[in-house]
Image 1 (cartoon, rainbow, N blue to C red):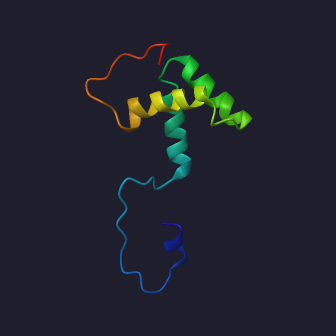
Image 2: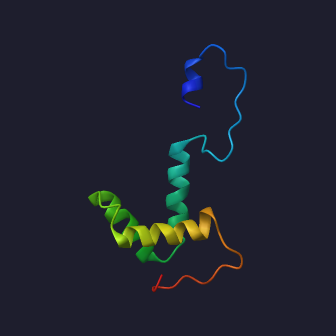
Length: 84
């Protein structure tokens, strides 16, 4: 999408499927949804993002739980628990 804003020649149309139109809005909404989860998930995500340790198993577990809940949910969803 950003490339197309440069108005390259030869592009007649664009189909976007599943990509956020605004990364700023996507990030804000992601954090809003993260705040709906138990507090330890948000604290873990924010701490590891601030420390640059996004490969840490705790960060990966928290973001995986977020994705299971909001990105690609299974139906019915199991309840969130501290053991996840």
